Image 1 (tube, one colour):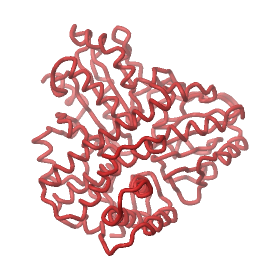
Image 2 (tube, rainbow, N blue to C red):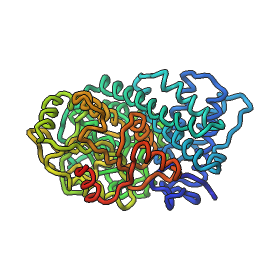
Image 3 (cartoon, rainbow, N blue to C red):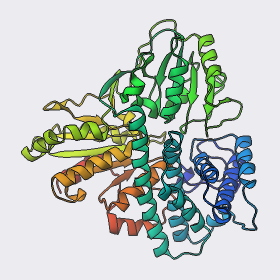
Image 4 (cartoon, one colour):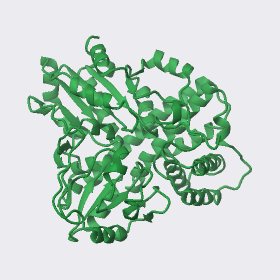
Length: 509
């Protein structure tokens, strides 16, 4: 094997990438990222929890998430940065883990990949000045567990603790975003692009968008979100900028087609970058933990991004663009605060039977065939049901007009994958209102996954004891048959089948 990686949903043959990453990573980059994990595990075992070490752990783990960093030199430099902090004989090779007992490997993979997802969320909270000692202590605890000879029971308990800590981390990020940028409120966002210079911002980082909006004020440049940045339009401290105009394109996996010869700068703030094509390489910029060979990397000062956008000039005429279902407006901004304000009305509609069911259809999008399942499922949902959604999986259906129920839109976009806390909080509030368990609500979760942030969200749902989740388009390759059987027994997780079959099963229980 030139490499081994099986952390994402699209891994080769649903077994593992061994020659080249399906994501586009070279074997050298994949091996370097394994070495980065080795150094982080060594750091946790040899060093104290300090601000500097927490930053190294957080950003180091984040760099190893699928579709974040493809730059071998950048990863190598980060490895050397960590080595300067460690001075002990501790030695561990993560590649040993891939060849161990498959059940142990499965449980440790759930912990490690979940930890990567937590690191992504914690990175966003930290840059806004928000910290949590429980999260920071767990980074070290979990990394220390990977080399240890722990039992399956001990590891399973640590898997659930990973979900518990992620809940704290997502709550912290929610606090950071809402206190910094205000509570999101519903807003219609156009997908059409105005003529003239513009910049497309992809990724997840609200702070980077805010900095760019400030630096482009009164410069004759329009700003458009892309992918998971779409929900930023709902935040009052971001949508107050008149040159934040709309959303460009659809989900991350379509960028190679949608960015082809685009007459604008493109800024990648976090994950979701794909191999960059030559037709737009000269206008791509990365920042923070994102890296790609032979593209410009910037930090906080976005003047090179601005200069390139002005030179490219944008489209000569207004350009009409639509989603995959033909719509040209998207409604965002339904955070938990917006939903809680209509909780009484929502409760009455559920009690009266005017709302019979709530479907949470969300998660990651991806390029693999079979993801049209989610489009068809949403189209089939009955008119007396609501569809909550979040993360980039919503691009499969978020331009469809599903109508309303007594003034409440049937399709409710709750934000980024980073905003999964909102959906969880709403579910817990409804359970409290109806004095029941979440599993007793007329609520079903139909989830899609692609990378490691989805893993930690799933672990949070397991920690909360939520059952009957339908997951797709395929189940994780790193979960062994025995561990999958345990998850099925305890939580009744099932793989998706067909939209019609799954919907009939849900509604006829």
